[in-house]
Length: 493
Image 1 (cartoon, rainbow, N blue to C red):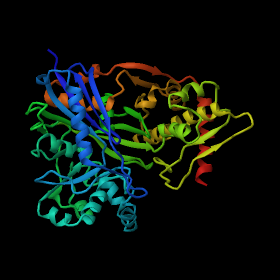
Image 2 (image 1 turned 30 degrees about the horizontal axis):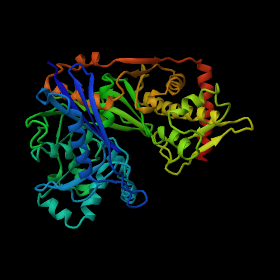
Image 3 (image 1 turned 90 degrees about the vertical axis):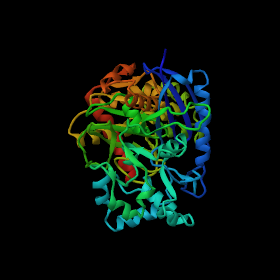
Image 4 (image 1 turned 180 degrees about the horizontal axis):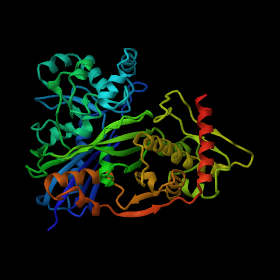
């Protein structure tokens, strides 16, 4: 008789529930999108009740064809820095969730930098001072929602990232917790102690009574209660932020292991083991995960804001393709970009440049240039910006990565994956299971519930679909890098 592990993958635009068996095979899944709200320029919000309803809907659909008595445990993975505050008695949010993409707290971050507190915060949290992270979002809610701070100090409110909110609702308000990977993204947790920082709580004026308890990633966080369509008492054993879950699901468990998730942007995490490595190249230092009774595992993180979104722009902005999938066949009509460079700084630069004012560039055009050359240059740019991040990571770690594991929608593009391997000069491994974020949450929950005995048992759950190996020479690689760097300099003039 099979045992089932449920993974709730609550993302930025949709909620997905995946069901895995004890062998790590995907049995069933369901997905539902929800509304994005943009109340002001630069502001992004979600309706927490809509997120909860999509969670219930996808749970019902995904579990409709299995014996629910065979569900052993539930894991949760989530969009990370998005945060909300709710009433402790009614469980009703007091304000929409403020999404990680939201820039409303830019002024608050500027004030912190003017006070020269940014380096102190970085040394304690591994994060740069930016509206991206949760602390200033929490501060904004408590200041701008009438009576929120008074109610918080009286213990009437609770706050959390999306994992915490889902845990609260799944347990009928009995469990208020989070794991170390999500807590590390709030800018309120000390990386060394794995606990909320009194200094940062004071700086951002966040009462500690609001905060969830921080647990190991495979801890018993709570049990289901009152859902109706699922039995009471199913243990919730694994929680991870989405990018950390993808790293774990890729079985990138040793120092030097790296993964890249190709989504709207690209997110790269490099496992640094139990050592906290502070970047000299403007990368983030974050918690990867912590298993109970074991040392915390850390990671370096870098992200490019525009990855798959560049293909969407070619489709929607320029009309060069009808669907995103067409870009590979279009790019294959030529053997190179013939000198065309596309720097996709459409919303500024992320790591390791961090220039919000930068704008995109297409250069090297001739009378012979056609849309296939632009398509090829777009795929090259997606790969080359990842190389810049990975090279910075290698310098920080003082160690070369062995190979890069990839996932996300654009990882299905064979030409892009070959270019990534060529320009990185390392093998690129693509797994059979693309839902590595959900798989990571399931494997973590399975460890907590005893379905899997040790992390070593998980290696056989990862299956290789295809490995891409470099097919160009070192001289060709270096020449391509020089041309790319010249294009970057033109953008930053």
